[in-house]
Image (cartoon, rainbow, N blue to C red):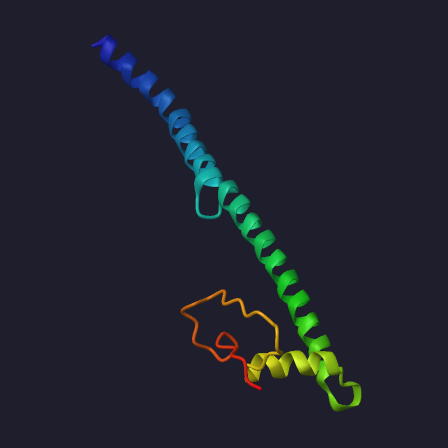
Length: 117
């Protein structure tokens, strides 16, 4: 009977620390691997950097388009740009020019540039 009582006493002494370590390990695991853990934070930071680079690209493209629009306004009309846009939209070309079709399945007006005189 002394052995059983000794086991109960030792089990009672060990239960608290084992339970405490289990709780600490549970929270430590989720702090690293969880939905809001360190690995998820690293992944989110990578996504943020990729999206910031994409925003910069879109801003640059928007700035270039705004410059082209400015050059097509009546006050600041650029004849070269006007000719380029008219040739693309209307499909006109000059004698001696070669047309290179880069997208053969594209049926848009800019892809179907034909020679008209």
